[in-house]
Length: 310
Image (tube, rainbow, N blue to C red):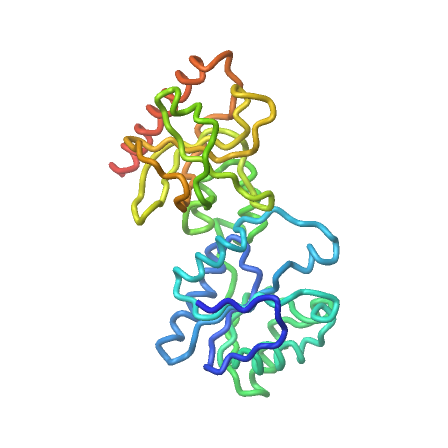
């Protein structure tokens, strides 16, 4: 996958099928858009995504919102899907004020050589969001490209959106989040050295330190899958600051894998959060902490046993 970032001067020579949007979290609605451009590869088009390097809300309000997926996670996900081009266009005063018709002609048709443009029905683009699905369809008729507008996908009676997913992540309702995303909510990164308390207790852990912009669910213990070296492991994950160990611990995602006791420092892994077990607690001492972790492990193994029987 070719990533085009931090530039306004580029040219894609190959004809493309383009999906446009923010793609925060890449939920089931986003996946519907992406499936359309991936199918277009059979007609000889390259699958391309056009997105801005920051949201208009973040730019104008000067607020950095917590993200369902970091830039690195999003890129990795798109590459696994088979996307050919990812354009992360700079969002600034100039790009924010561009006329909607010029947006389509200059960005999507000229720079990206778009032949098919896929977007959601709530599409908004160009100066003050004046461009919409109706305008895109009119321009398609005039300029001889195909516009495909995708309707919203619903969960029961509510439209699936990044806002909806974010609400459920904040509640720790990971089973609902999995349903909305079409995949488990994950936290990715390189395994770092921790304070080795887990190994001292006979319960070694893998430690990730997520970036500040990553949206985390409530502090606590979760049942999790961990993807590492092409394998899937089962375990229990604690998200939080380890209050039993000390008051100034950094926020971490710490996972004990069942039956795993290898050196994994420096390896990349993806922790998939499947179900909330209990809130994070401060225990009297390490012995009480060990007992609680052993209980978590038993609960986790029972959870996975039932999961495999369903």
